Every structure is written in structure tokens, then in C-alpha cells.
Image 1 (cartoon, helix red, strand yellow):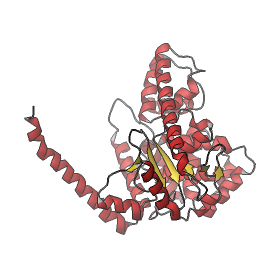
Image 2 (cartoon, one colour):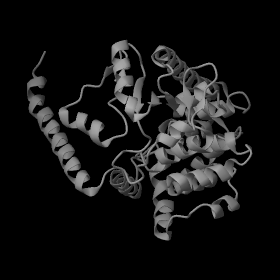
Image 3 (cartoon, rainbow, N blue to C red):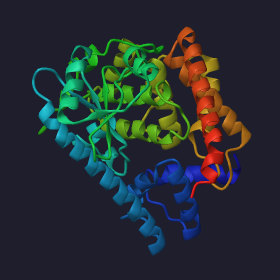
Image 4 (cartoon, rainbow, N blue to C red):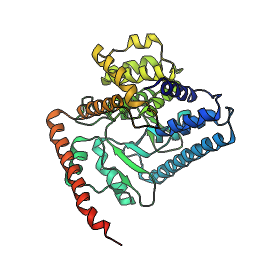
Length: 368
């Protein structure tokens, strides 16, 4: 990564925290990097009303802010339509972006919402799924193997969508895959969840929201350009840092759920990249990953997560880092005896699809 690219990234990360004072040429490059990483609306939230900029730059930021606001309104509308399906029979917890919106958190400003995530007790999963189907939400059409993957190995049902709505509903019964290395009983998450005033929904408690963001970022997702996930972690930490005994509860909760490692990674990269309010004493109180893991993650995560030069394809070291982190992602989700046949099946299916498309190409060439 060139020194110019590094300085651009550093500028982007600073622009997420405070207004920037840069010329139009620098803004043009910064906006392209922000768009690649899904951070342009967050950049707008920080800079639109405070930073000096030309009208051209202001229009770009305003457009990003309006798109994010539109997506947020779509999420609120989806949750409004879901409200009649929630009663006192069992809790329904809104996760991630939907929760931040309903709780009116500052970190929701400029955050693109791509779907609505709900968590229900596993014993009531079929009930909630049937309620959604009866109300008109339709599951994604899957082949039998993919259906089994969701039912037996994942922590959620196949995505559902209401015809004409722009957002999917993802229905979860846990926050980690049931076959994953960090799988645990989510009952305590539900027990500790908190009401969201004015709604029938609930949200994870403060420390569980932070832990979920860290798990989702570093143990339940591919890390390619996932800097926005670290921005979420930073936003949650800034929201809750001043609460009495928050850090003690967070560290104790991580130990209870055996989530110290993803929490350490989340705190480390949020503090390193975004100057999150994490003091050395907090790291001393938290179990540290083994040295080899720390060295590997500190080397690979920036290459995988941070955007490279948008004018050129990612360099070899970035592609290798993303490949290695993707392999890590798969190994964390499934044990090898399940993962190997799963990946072989998916690879063969992908190759067959490519061959089918090539076989159809000559016939399509002659079509009117």
C-alpha cells in the first residue's frame, strides 16, 4: 500500500470523527475511497454541516446522506410492518442497524441499513417464521442443500422479503453459527435484553451489543472492506463508555460467553484506527490472544479491511490477505469434516454454472 494510499485512509478515518479542511481534489479522492468501503454517508454525517467544501463536494455528500436516510426510513417502515407480529408470547430482539435506529443512537446517522435482523428464542423460531409467511413475507428460494445448510448449520433461517419491499428480514435464533468455534447458548442474551420504548421490540443490552458487533466483524463475516463494522464498534463504545461500570461489565460478559478474543480484536482495531476511548487498563483486564494470532491479525486485517487504491485492482498482497482471511472465516464457521464437503459442493456447483453460461452463449449471440 503506497504512502499516498495510507495517508488517504488515515484522512478518511479522521473524517469519520471530525470535520475536514481539505481542497476539492482531495475530497474527490476521499469520496471514492469512502464509497468503496461504504462510508460515504458516515463521512457526510460528520462533515456536511461543519466542514468547508465546494458546492460540488457538498452535493456528493448530500446525496450520500439522503440515500442513507432513505434506507433508514425503509428499515423503520419494515419494522412498522413487523410490529403486529410481535406479542407477549416470546421476545423479539432487533439486532444491529435496526436496533440503533429504534434506540435513536448517534451511530445510526449515515449508516447504510441493508436488512432487518431479528433474534427470537430457538423454541419459537418456527412460530415467528410462520407468522412472517402468513403475513406475506416470502423466503428466498433455495435448493435442498442450501435449505439444509440454513436449518442445520447456520444461526438464521433463509432470508425473507415482502413483495415490493426493498429490505430483507433475517430471522436469527443465535448470533453465532451453531457449528462455529464460538457457538454458545443465546438464552442469556435474550434474558438480558432491554425494551425499546414505544415499540414491542427489544434490543441487546449495551455490553451484548458491543460483543455482537465484535463477533459479527471478526468471527462471523468475511473481512473484505469491512472497515464499516469497526466503525460500528467505535460508535457503540463511544455511546456506552461513560456508563457506570460499563467496561467492567463488558469484560466480565466477554469472559462469561468466552468471547474475549473477538472483543480484543474489536477494541484493538477500533482504538488503533478510530481512537476509540479504550485505555491500556482495559486491555490489561482482557484475555489477550496468543502472540502468533495477534501478529497475523495485525498484518492481515488492515490489508483485508481497509480499501486499496480505487484506480487499480487490489495488489497481490491484498488479494492474498483477503484469501487467507476468507479461509479463516470458513474454518471458524464450520469444523473441517463439514467444511470440506461443503466447499467442494459449492465449488462444483459454481463450475457447473459457469459451464452452463458458456454453453448458452453461442445461442444467445444469434438471438435478435
